[in-house]
Amino acid sequence: MAVTRIHTPDNGLARILGGKDARSMDDLVRDAEERLVQIAPHIDQFVAREIDVILAIGGQREEEVFAECRKVSDAALRVAEVAGAAGATAVGDVARGIRLMIDSLFTGGVWHADALRIHVESLAILTRGAPQSPAEADVIVERLKVLRARIGVPD
Image (cartoon, rainbow, N blue to C red; front, side, top):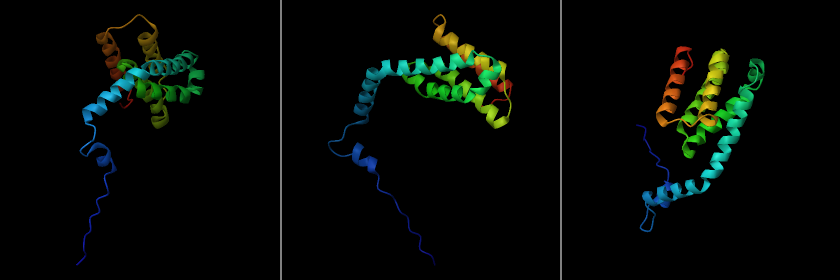
Protein backbone atom coordinates (compact mmCIF):
# COMPACT_ATOMS: atom_id res chain seq x y z
CA MET A 1 0.00 0.00 0.00
CA ALA A 2 1.35 3.41 -0.98
CA VAL A 3 1.99 5.98 1.69
CA THR A 4 0.68 9.47 1.04
CA ARG A 5 2.83 12.29 2.28
CA ILE A 6 1.59 15.84 2.48
CA HIS A 7 4.04 18.69 2.39
CA THR A 8 2.94 22.04 3.78
CA PRO A 9 5.39 24.79 2.84
CA ASP A 10 6.51 27.31 5.40
CA ASN A 11 4.30 30.41 5.41
CA GLY A 12 6.82 33.24 5.25
CA LEU A 13 4.06 35.83 5.38
CA ALA A 14 3.00 34.58 8.82
CA ARG A 15 6.34 35.73 10.24
CA ILE A 16 5.74 39.22 8.88
CA LEU A 17 2.09 39.54 9.86
CA GLY A 18 2.01 37.39 12.98
CA GLY A 19 3.80 37.36 16.30
CA LYS A 20 3.45 39.29 19.53
CA ASP A 21 4.98 42.53 18.22
CA ALA A 22 3.47 42.28 14.76
CA ARG A 23 1.65 45.17 13.20
CA SER A 24 -2.06 44.71 12.75
CA MET A 25 -3.75 44.67 9.38
CA ASP A 26 -5.33 47.98 10.31
CA ASP A 27 -1.85 49.46 10.73
CA LEU A 28 -0.71 48.08 7.39
CA VAL A 29 -3.79 49.36 5.57
CA ARG A 30 -3.51 52.79 7.21
CA ASP A 31 0.17 53.02 6.20
CA ALA A 32 -0.66 52.00 2.63
CA GLU A 33 -3.41 54.62 2.43
CA GLU A 34 -1.05 57.29 3.76
CA ARG A 35 1.56 56.30 1.20
CA LEU A 36 -1.05 56.47 -1.53
CA VAL A 37 -1.89 60.05 -0.54
CA GLN A 38 1.84 60.90 -0.74
CA ILE A 39 2.27 59.45 -4.22
CA ALA A 40 -1.11 60.57 -5.61
CA PRO A 41 0.37 63.48 -7.61
CA HIS A 42 2.80 61.08 -9.29
CA ILE A 43 -0.03 58.68 -10.10
CA ASP A 44 -2.06 61.55 -11.58
CA GLN A 45 0.89 62.58 -13.77
CA PHE A 46 1.47 59.01 -14.89
CA VAL A 47 -2.20 58.50 -15.80
CA ALA A 48 -2.28 61.85 -17.65
CA ARG A 49 0.78 60.93 -19.73
CA GLU A 50 -0.72 57.56 -20.69
CA ILE A 51 -4.05 59.18 -21.56
CA ASP A 52 -2.17 61.65 -23.78
CA VAL A 53 -0.74 58.67 -25.69
CA ILE A 54 -4.19 57.10 -26.10
CA LEU A 55 -5.83 60.33 -27.24
CA ALA A 56 -3.00 61.31 -29.58
CA ILE A 57 -2.99 57.99 -31.40
CA GLY A 58 -6.73 57.37 -31.05
CA GLY A 59 -7.52 60.69 -32.73
CA GLN A 60 -5.66 59.82 -35.93
CA ARG A 61 -6.99 58.23 -39.09
CA GLU A 62 -8.18 54.63 -38.81
CA GLU A 63 -5.15 53.09 -40.52
CA GLU A 64 -2.80 54.99 -38.21
CA VAL A 65 -4.73 53.86 -35.15
CA PHE A 66 -4.62 50.31 -36.46
CA ALA A 67 -0.85 50.52 -36.99
CA GLU A 68 -0.29 51.84 -33.47
CA CYS A 69 -2.99 49.85 -31.69
CA ARG A 70 -0.46 47.94 -29.53
CA LYS A 71 0.77 51.24 -28.07
CA VAL A 72 -2.81 52.30 -27.39
CA SER A 73 -3.59 48.94 -25.81
CA ASP A 74 -0.51 49.03 -23.58
CA ALA A 75 -1.23 52.61 -22.46
CA ALA A 76 -4.87 51.68 -21.80
CA LEU A 77 -3.80 48.76 -19.65
CA ARG A 78 -1.51 50.99 -17.60
CA VAL A 79 -4.33 53.50 -17.07
CA ALA A 80 -6.80 50.77 -16.18
CA GLU A 81 -4.41 49.35 -13.60
CA VAL A 82 -3.72 52.58 -11.71
CA ALA A 83 -6.54 55.04 -12.40
CA GLY A 84 -8.63 53.67 -9.53
CA ALA A 85 -5.83 54.46 -7.10
CA ALA A 86 -6.00 58.05 -8.33
CA GLY A 87 -9.74 58.15 -7.67
CA ALA A 88 -10.64 57.91 -11.36
CA THR A 89 -12.54 54.64 -11.47
CA ALA A 90 -14.60 55.56 -14.54
CA VAL A 91 -11.46 56.57 -16.43
CA GLY A 92 -9.93 53.20 -15.55
CA ASP A 93 -13.08 51.40 -16.71
CA VAL A 94 -13.09 53.20 -20.07
CA ALA A 95 -9.39 52.48 -20.51
CA ARG A 96 -10.09 48.83 -19.76
CA GLY A 97 -12.76 48.92 -22.46
CA ILE A 98 -10.21 50.27 -24.93
CA ARG A 99 -7.89 47.43 -24.02
CA LEU A 100 -10.71 44.91 -24.53
CA MET A 101 -11.59 46.41 -27.91
CA ILE A 102 -8.03 46.04 -29.16
CA ASP A 103 -7.66 42.59 -27.60
CA SER A 104 -10.71 41.51 -29.60
CA LEU A 105 -8.78 42.33 -32.76
CA PHE A 106 -6.01 39.95 -31.81
CA THR A 107 -8.21 37.20 -30.38
CA GLY A 108 -11.18 37.40 -32.73
CA GLY A 109 -9.65 39.09 -35.74
CA VAL A 110 -12.33 41.77 -35.85
CA TRP A 111 -11.45 45.46 -35.95
CA HIS A 112 -14.26 47.68 -34.63
CA ALA A 113 -12.88 51.10 -35.57
CA ASP A 114 -16.04 53.08 -34.82
CA ALA A 115 -16.60 51.44 -31.46
CA LEU A 116 -12.95 51.99 -30.52
CA ARG A 117 -13.25 55.65 -31.50
CA ILE A 118 -16.33 55.97 -29.26
CA HIS A 119 -14.26 54.57 -26.38
CA VAL A 120 -11.43 57.02 -27.06
CA GLU A 121 -13.85 59.94 -27.31
CA SER A 122 -15.47 58.85 -24.04
CA LEU A 123 -12.05 58.87 -22.40
CA ALA A 124 -11.52 62.39 -23.74
CA ILE A 125 -14.89 63.49 -22.35
CA LEU A 126 -14.06 62.10 -18.91
CA THR A 127 -10.56 63.58 -18.78
CA ARG A 128 -10.57 66.69 -20.97
CA GLY A 129 -14.18 67.78 -21.13
CA ALA A 130 -16.41 69.43 -18.58
CA PRO A 131 -16.31 67.63 -15.23
CA GLN A 132 -18.76 64.74 -15.07
CA SER A 133 -20.70 63.75 -12.00
CA PRO A 134 -20.09 60.19 -10.80
CA ALA A 135 -23.58 59.27 -12.04
CA GLU A 136 -22.85 60.67 -15.52
CA ALA A 137 -19.51 58.86 -15.62
CA ASP A 138 -21.26 55.63 -14.63
CA VAL A 139 -23.73 56.07 -17.50
CA ILE A 140 -20.84 56.41 -19.96
CA VAL A 141 -19.16 53.29 -18.58
CA GLU A 142 -22.38 51.26 -18.68
CA ARG A 143 -23.23 52.31 -22.24
CA LEU A 144 -19.75 51.32 -23.39
CA LYS A 145 -20.24 47.91 -21.77
CA VAL A 146 -23.51 47.50 -23.66
CA LEU A 147 -21.81 48.54 -26.89
CA ARG A 148 -19.04 45.97 -26.41
CA ALA A 149 -21.56 43.25 -25.60
CA ARG A 150 -23.59 44.02 -28.72
CA ILE A 151 -20.59 43.75 -31.02
CA GLY A 152 -19.32 40.59 -29.33
CA VAL A 153 -16.35 41.93 -27.39
CA PRO A 154 -16.09 39.84 -24.22
CA ASP A 155 -15.78 41.72 -20.95
